[in-house]
Image (cartoon, rainbow, N blue to C red; front, side):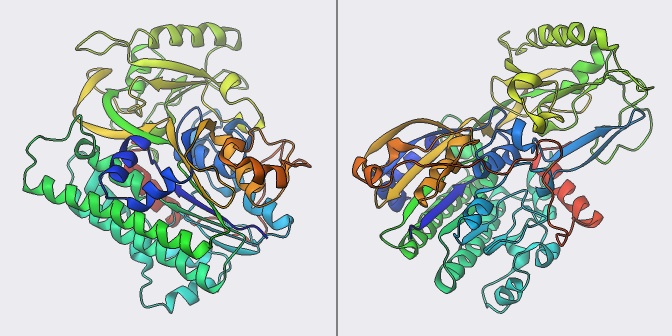
Length: 523
């Protein structure tokens, strides 16, 4: 029976990985690249972790699966209430569930939006979970005790720690970037050791893991990693950070080498990323823009809401809820709810589009808005109900800012890193073409490629295709593409986690809010 190893590198980009392969920092990745297939993997229209990773493992676009951001809002007329997305908001069947149905065993480690965990034949250890809640969000539950018995296991190191994040990423960071990188070296060691433990003790047909330190290190250290902004003469602290960055990627290279070796010579390995990375140049205060259009109003002298907006909902008719959303929600009046008259919706939205395209770089006068995504076009489907009416794509692909300020657009005092659409695709192993350059793939292509690698039929309602260009012609002739019945999809209501699945506690939600705030996804 085929074995497939899927390694997801959060935020990985060829622009960073290729030089590290070529200068000897990542020699095994160079072997994978040169001895296998490679290409660009295009993220979802809005290249954000929850929608992109969910698309990766469902083969369905965000408008179908419904996971659009970290946080969702429901408008009751008097106020918009916000809560976290979780696995129960996913309307579409995952490749873990599909593989299980077809008698394949799975393990999936560190994937976001995995809680509450649905039982599988295999193992699920979710990502984006505070260490205090890891035990009750893991499947099978008794696996935690097995890990706890290992001398190397430390959940405090392995899981998110928002105190550390806040110290590193806040406007006035208390943690040196070198310490931040050192933390993520330790975290990746933990996840690697959990994966190695399982692959040795109880291997599966589909084995998948996310290493998310790539994203975290780039967010904080992009100015040192990008040759365009790296200092010509780094000071002592910068030299230490650069050395640790190199150590991080060198160790990651070693982790992947060992996992590939454990998978065996007949296995196929796929390395993918949810998005790429690049320079973050602008601060674009989207709610300030809406305020100046007379559509948004802040409360005076009151504490901010949980999501940090502090808006006067009795008068606000358009708003951006989170920095990570890059979106504008337009409230339409009806049943006593404040908002614009329904017949004025197109007029107001088109007016906003025109005004947004007028936003300019204050230094060179160039537009800062590259594209504006319409809800009904880019998030079509039952899962797009909670999508923004408008989603901005900025020229630097950065996140917007939700706070008030004197200027709508200004350049950041220091270039940081942010999500770009072009991620990575690498394939290696038995049946994979050597030296192949694969045409640009879409995120919806990952799931059918993984299922085909496992020898399984591709559901007829998948939106992508298997990356046939990555496979040898002889292997494809012996293993032709097979279409199967549609994967499960909830069209009227979100997919429901099993009754035994436990929702996140209020304390756990609060901790995730703080983590997202520290990372800059919400204000």
